[in-house]
Length: 220
Image (cartoon, rainbow, N blue to C red):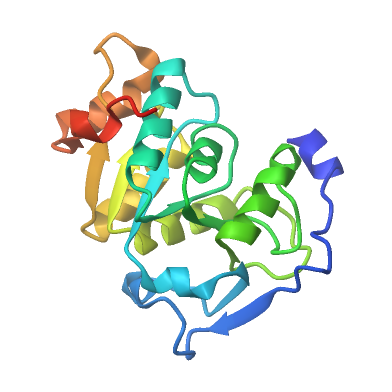
């Protein structure tokens, strides 16, 4: 975290951010269902993606090989869908990289690279998709920003795919928001004694749907 903050670098001015307010026609209507929809959204990229069918893929920053392979295949399976995620290391990054159309939600100012290790990914999302943040300019990636970011990820998507989650994690806060919004939650199953997917197992025991085997079948 400290190293990432030291490396916070402004996104080059060649990518000048735009601004949407809650009163604009292009403001995503899905966010009106939130208790506290963002009044302003800053963006770089293709706004038309907000009007297309969207799914969210979320999970651990340190995923196991099983979750990595399943995420890669899932993202490739849904090339016609817009994939929404949080631009974090791990599952988020894999989902963005393997999509054709993607929306990345930042937990910092729209002109910052965070985490810095994902600088190339963030640039790629700006080119082929859409970068969104409710935080202006060079706002820092403060810890309380990320639960707010997660509510946007949950609200935008029609379905939420949980690939790997611990019990106490950002992924589970996204799922909580999605449940309050009545979203379809689909979960990658883990063995019952596999603590790496403990959050997944709890969600399935509480009635979440298992990801269909065909959705994560091997793709060349």
